[in-house]
Every structure is written in structure tokens, then in C-alpha cells.
Length: 68
Image (cartoon, rainbow, N blue to C red; front, side):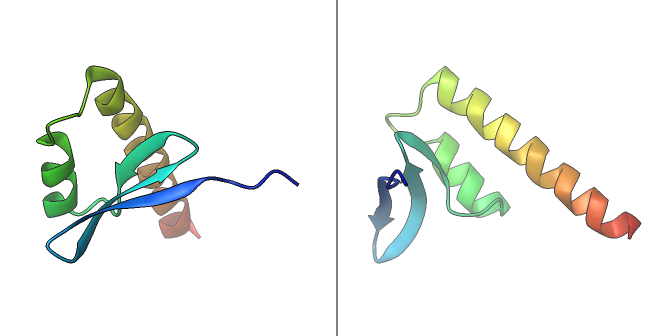
């Protein structure tokens, strides 16, 4: 079993982002977390694409739960 590499971005004692296998995402999809993430200094266009895809998957999961 391959072990995942994980780290966190912490600012002022608050976890802002999580990195898994080289992919960094906000810790949650609250407005504040996403806003802080997208205004980060090192955020590139590809990071924003990955964020959008991750949020779309999360929204699909929420919709599926509501249908049950």
C-alpha cells in the first residue's frame, strides 16, 4: 500500500490548506477558506482549475445526498 504524503499550510495558528501528493486545496469549501486560498501568493492557474474540479465533485456529492 502506497503511503500518501500530506502536509498543511498554517497561518496564525489556523490551517488554511492541505497538500496531498503535491496537490494543494483549501481545508474546506467555506467562502473564507476558498477566498484565502485563491489570493495566496503562490497560487497558479492550474491550482484554480483543480480547485474548481474539486468543488464540482463536492457539490455533486451534496446533491446526491439530498436526493436520498
